[in-house]
Image 1 (cartoon, rainbow, N blue to C red):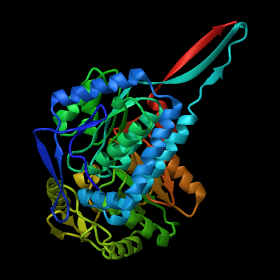
Image 2 (image 1 turned 90 degrees about the vertical axis):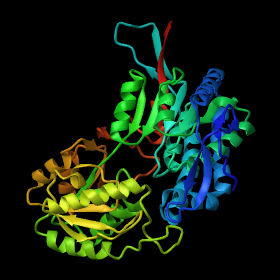
Image 3 (image 1 turned 45 degrees about the horizontal axis):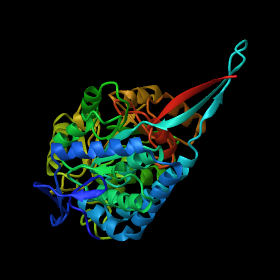
Image 4 (image 1 turned 135 degrees about the vertical axis):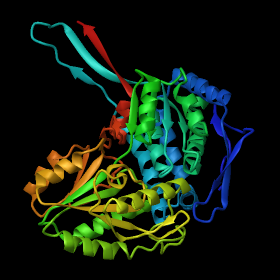
Length: 473
């Protein structure tokens, strides 16, 4: 598989004078050298996108473009999965799943494009003679910024709905792991050429924070879709002012385990959702509130199961957890663990580290103001915390700035729904942990965890303008 090294402007891959090496996060082998965009190239991509947006995309073109792009990705699925495994450090089985999900997502976006209909509005009594109806129009040019942990699917969650709504879109992947996004845009480029779409309808720029700033501050941008940290999201919101945004930001996901929960189910779910992709998932299970009556049994079984996780080379099928992606994140996580232990927390499992490889860490009874509990860890660490009163458990789950997803484990449906309704999050998993996302479902956060809603049906409407027409009869 040939990896385009440049940036995509007006349907053509362009080179640059500055390149960044993208390394395998386990072996450190160079996977690709990616061109870094300058300000002029960002502006070129944005002007090409504006021209394409003004030309418009018919429904037929949108649908066929997305379907063909999905087919192109499916043709190279195994090679693409291996590249994603290398650039992110996620295990190969998860990388394969990311490719499958992306192919399905693009096809879903194509189908949802056909369902973007309007509606007729009733008039109030005494106002006869008017017929009102509403339809959706593209917002124009969408800037799509995706993170490093799932470079293919998370970019597709932005680009797919943007195109399905009839927009032009310019993407910027994370410089630490851009290859999945690059290959998505190559599939889209080929598909756009096949259906004779305007060449600027998709564009890709590469680089770090400075390139991101040039992108979002372009006067050509009509909407920004961003997945990443809450602080960066806040900075983007301030920079773009009144322009619409769709943000999927940080999380600090928790689960409540009631005394009547099925512990066999809880242990399997909670261990998997705490350590999948080394905890580098925004809905990773980070805090587990366990009723005091079962806390000792739960803790013993959880630690035993977590200790069985195989850590190592993510390319090997027997590996269950690979490295964290960045050295400075491994350093930060290590520091937070030590701070928690100094403050009185107990380390029940973990402490081993080899470079970016970090073994699963289980903490207990950590003071909840400690960063390892209060902040988004984005690493293979989970804290077990006891509770005696359900209202107190809910209060502690709701503390802090985040509100993405949570989980509730209980044998009583009444208790489960009572707890679920009280949690200030956008998604609740009952008898499962929070780290599950179905790509066709609505997904988003409240508080500092996001604005707007992803998922094709909803994201397409976020990236559209609702226009009212009134016909005087």
